[in-house]
Image (cartoon, rainbow, N blue to C red; front, side, top):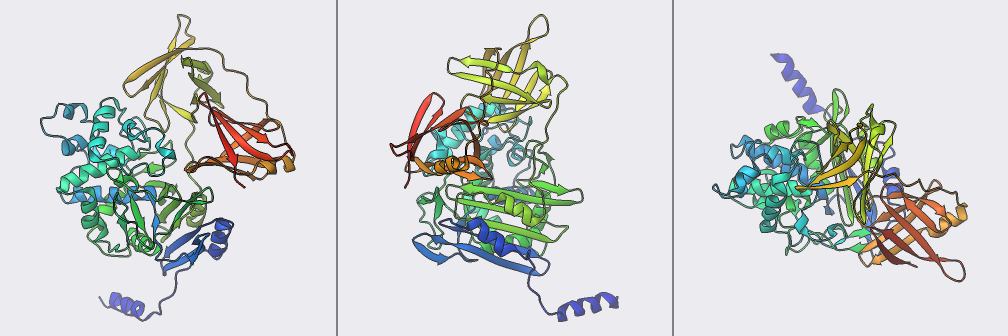
Length: 541
């Protein structure tokens, strides 16, 4: 009985020491933010405490340094807070994870209740509901809109659930859905008899004492200490939310994220400990992302040393959070620049970035071909090392995962394709199953691959720069390691390949870029050829 007392006394007399982040943390932050109009802030948590580090400024015209108390939009990191609200709601007896969202959102006698019964709260937090990433009624090309979620309200969300839900392939795969998490949050608010915002604040943010963390709601002024976001080198508007707030509306500070990480690592005693324990339990494999998924959290790392992580992005901000209980450390990165900090975050926490598990098929060679579904829209099926991929006109290349003989789920999209065979057993057609529709295309030959040529370094460098299609939508061309990349506002960087001088093509989407020169031979503009459209953009000086 005496020994524990002596140990506790010894601990009490120890001199506190500072957290010990990687020795080159500041250098890595400085390298990441070099030449950018904004910057990045890091929160490091380990057994010795919390350490903050920053690099960069508010903006080119505001040299104020970022700090531990600067606020940032954290985008989809919001989803782990919504998932924690789900776990706490279940602990409090307000919901069961197996409840359907419709039970909480629709009248009891609504005829759509039965049609939507399979879409449970668990399927929504694990991204296996089969709902699309964004609802069809949010408007055209929301990714390029300056504030895409500002006017999307509860009425529209429920209308979209009625539209997409009855035909959603529930449980087929983990298919990331902002829409689905919006449905989840609205359902949880209803379970508590309040709004999502009130439920999250009362049952998650307040118990954790996250006093500088809030939701960017439509018509609410942004906090005065919010660092302005940047994309393509210029300031961009902040995002605000209504019904999609559960998917990405949180604004927070590095200091508050440190408090949250200490909670996640078991360093603080709060009423939410039991809810967190449930949220961290693996619920299903996330083969198409890599690793597993719990309540909102993606789970990677080595056996016996799991790392829980999530990232987030809005137009002009990026965020990353991860922690490893076995190692006793965690990291949060927040940036007011549209540049991913995931690779840096994974490196700091000591985890290799997750990679999808490739599924190799013994008969993969049966399926490649072009399958026209309309005069201007076709699906190309390709095979590489026994794995199949699908690419629709003007869209990224996506992996296929077998769900039955001659039937495949499209990775990352709530859609499936099935193949028909002729009397001789040869694949003769494809049927796309999506949003309750079945579109058929007969098989034809794939076009020959485009030949890639090498260009001199001086020629490659001449293309680098920002090209504005609209004031808010810019394509940035950059060179890294002798290769050229194109990055559109709010999208990931993608490699482009030269087929001739000034002519380039993508491999991940069906698109091309042509560069234009003036009489002196200087590159002054580009044209993006995609989906039957030619979009012209002048190069910024």
